[in-house]
Every structure is written in structure tokens, then in C-alpha cells.
Image 1: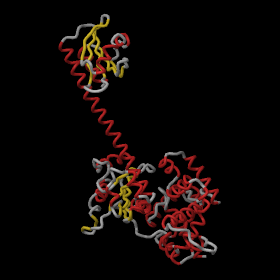
Image 2 (image 1 turned 90 degrees about the vertical axis):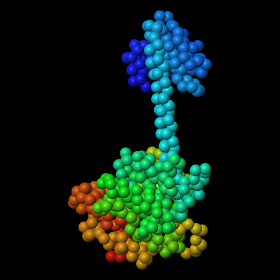
Image 3 (image 1 turned 30 degrees about the horizontal axis):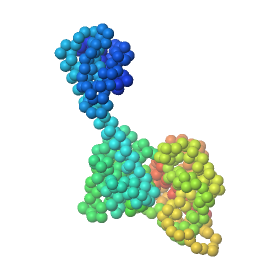
Length: 468
């Protein structure tokens, strides 16, 4: 709008200002506008123009000629004030009036754009709130939060999580491209991950009915995400198995592991490998007894501490800090409190793996406290069962010997690539290259979220016991 005022000055030789209210507040003006010298005496006239009593007026202040145009037709109006040393002719007045009309249109366009940006921001927040409720296993809470505008996704029986890795600048255009007027994406939701700036999380409704071997949604929004990856060599996509809405967290975990594999495949698209987690291979009642006994000290802590501890088992602390908008120091303080209660060092990768397994067991098998008079089993007891042994051997079987050695040394070094490189006698980059290869072979994320590290810790522990 400043360029418009400068254009008017060049065309007419009069100085111009955009006045916001009757008190004479100047929003912007040309360089030579006389300011308070003119606006002070104009206060009564500005009051009429801003209030809607007058549309335009011409007057004189000392030796200056003034022409005023009220902008807009409703509410508190701004005023275009033009000041010159000569009486403006009809041509000059017409240009001033035309400029006022143009500035009104520009402001309406700006207001509309600001409203649209605000709407997009609120829609993005609401989509993330729905995702958060689903990750917490609360579809009913998601419905309550969106009363009056319930996303169609919440009426689906099952969903898949599509985790798209792309440049951060591409996320907003992709989200808007598939957004409908309600702020959702048809039967699906595409959410910008606040923790990992290069991730888009697609919650894709999974239809029961299949057409040519793929569901209808797979041919719709899911196929659109696949096409994006095929058309963009820097994209990758991990896809979970179908899950009930209440198991969205498990689907998301599967998608993160699949994405780690996708980055190393020629197509850059990978579905989950279908292997069940360790928690599903353990004997249910003894495992649940161990997990609840193990985690019982957390019951005395604030729920916020427990929730933050759960989040930091699934992603790095910096990502958790961005996710819930608190400082890393606060995250560290909560973890220190949880570690003291459990008698563990939660900076140790093996301790984190044990806590993560216990949390997974209590989340997967909710139910009443088991009644038993016996001593609770130890984790070693659970990991020495045949199903656990079979799970560990199947997980590690694809690894070549030298990658197996690198992985074991990396775990012994508390997942520190620099320390592992020193112990082995190779470079840090070589260690990370081996770990990237291990991600693809194991189908587990080791370096981004790091959630696959827990499985590796338990698998190496089980196979070491078997060898012994």
C-alpha cells in the first residue's frame, strides 16, 4: 500500500497519509506529509469521516489545501488525507478517490488472506489434536474435541499410518492440496509432525472392501501419497498394517520402522514387514505381572512425569520438547525424577529398552491387577521363553557378521557412534553406514526416532543368553 501512496504522489504532487482513527494515528504516509500540523486541526472532521457521517471532504489548513476520502462503507473507517500547496483540480481529486478505492480493495484482500492463514493454522492445530487423541488410544476423546465437525476418519473401523518423509517446505503445499473445506482430507487426515520437521503423518481410513487387491482408500489418498514418492526422488514413505483407531500408536510405530526401510529401497516405499513386536511374544499374565511390578514406582509421581517418560522412550528428547512445547531442561528434570523412582539411569540404552517394553506391555494388555501370591517373574525369565528366543533369532538373522558386530558394539557404547567407532577402530561415518544398512535389513528405525533400538537391545540380550 505504501507503493500506491508513492505512485499517487508522483502523479499529482500532493503528499498523502493513511489515517487509522479520529485521533490522527498515521499508518503510513509519503515522506513530505506535514503530520500533526494538518491532522491536529482536522480532528473534528476526521471524527465524522471515521464514524461514517461523511464520505469525503475538502478544506484548508493555513496555506495547505486538504482533500479527505473515507475508505470502506462500514464500521470504523480509515481516511486517506491528501495535502498540497495548490487547489486540487478535478483530475487530481479523481485520482485521490481512485486511490482510496484501490486501497480499500487491497485491505480487504489482505484481511481475507490473514483470515485464511488463521483458518489454516487453526485447522492444522485441530488435526494435530485429533492425531494426539488417537495416539493416546482415545477415539472418543477425539470425537468430543471435534463436536459439530467430527472428521469422517473417526467413523472408520481401521486405519493405516502413512509416514511421508519430504523437505519441510513441501509439507504445507501437500497438506493444502488434499484439504477439503472442512479442514480435513475427506475420510483421511494429513498432519504435519511438530517433532520431526521433514515428516508428514497420513491417517488413511482402511476400507474393508477391496478392489483388485487394494482397498478403495489405497487407490485414493494412499495412492496419491505413493505417487508423490514416485515423482520426487527425495521423498520416502513408510506404511503400517491396518489397525483399529484405538491402536493408532502401534500403527505409527510400524510406519516409522517401515520408513527406515523405505529410505534404502529403490522404490523408496515400504510397507511394514508384518513381524509382531516382542511384547506380543511373551506369556501374557507373567509379562503383565512383571511390567506392572516394574513400573509401580511411577504411580507415586505426577502423571505429567509418567507421560513425558513414555514419550521419551519413543523419540529423542529434543523432539519431545518440540512436540509438547517445553524446554529440554524440563524434559531432563522429569526423566531424572522417573529414573530415581525406578532406580534406573534412563540415559542408559538398556534401561530405556526395559522401560519401553514394560510400558508397551501395560498399554497392550490393559486389565485388572493380576491376583498372585507368587514372586513376580524377572525380565530374564520372560526373555528365556521359546517364543522370545524365536523372535530374537528371526529379527537378527538377516545381519551379516560384521554388521552384527558393529550393532553389538554400538549398544555396548550406549548407542554412541563415536565411541563405537573408537572401540572397533573404524570411522564414525562407517559406523553410521553400518547402522543404516542394519535398519534396512532388520526393518527397524535406529537413528531417527530410535524406537528400533529397544528391539535390538532385547534381541542381542536374548541371543547372547542362547549362545551362553
